Length: 453
Image (cartoon, rainbow, N blue to C red):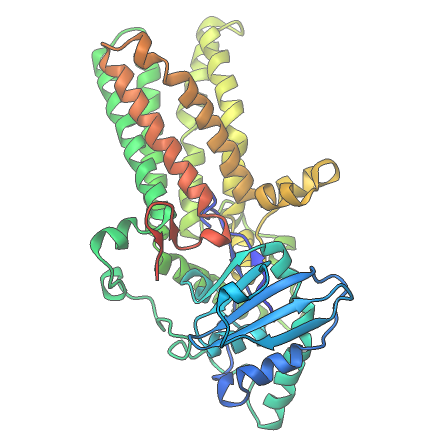
């Protein structure tokens, strides 16, 4: 099966958060298919396949270090494949997409539709170029999938054989970061957009907490607001602590693998066909995402608004419905709550299990506006609730940045001016990096350091 690009919470930006991934996640996979069929034989099954909806263009497939095949989809929808191992990239036509597999085992597992999602999170499969066009090639690989299943059946290979993680070059069990990372310290902890974005938001939130504690201790008319902000900052710190825990590629892979295992167990425990995760009834803890690390982080972030709810209620109780403070807090919460709600929804048990199984997770925002804004660009950037939530949050922080920056010139002698500028800058840049990490083409990549190998 050809790679399918799906999403993950980057956080955004997407860069997942979270973060997007492709393929079908399963805790089971075939033994090395390269022992039964060679890569050239596999592409011979693709040559001549026809798919009307396949995007016309040229696609380069790189399998391992030595195998390279060019697939050209003609105007008739027919695929033509040729071996280009002896040709340089400069000799190839303009490429629509490049799909690279780290080994033939990875390629054949993908062709069977049994490649675990951890392979995408650890860079075993990479898709660059036009991702939407790459998705459209899936029907062209159906003859190969059928041939593999037929051959497996003829030689007695169990299609549900236990996954051999060593075969895929992946860790079989979760191990401490220091046991799997051979990179330098900075690459281990700052080597991806998701990691950098998480640390930046943590730094910005910590500075916010320090400022509000100082203002609260000083007293004055804004003391109550300062203490409410301090309580909110603490909850945000806890939230980003959870996100930092899962920002490491291996930690995210372990979580999604565990979710896929839960889904498999649920399917095996019932004889009835289970509806897709997003269509099931879930308990309130599962709806809020309290059953996974990302969800707990998002829920803490959502709870960070509670101190302001209390403060607004006290303001209205003291000054009546005409309270300026009460309405100011209410309007601010109304602006920031929607993106927070979308992020919580994207981290629910149903959404995470759907992503772990090869889906895109919750898409309430997109489906709500699909009728009027269902363009390809809209779906690419706002097609999942995690991306939509991050984009909205990031846009709001950019607006705050534009409001705060002029104060450097208007009030250059106040310590609060520089604290607020640093807080907002760290937070905005961090959200932007998390958002970038949500796009599959930037998975396990750093805007500053390039892609991790």
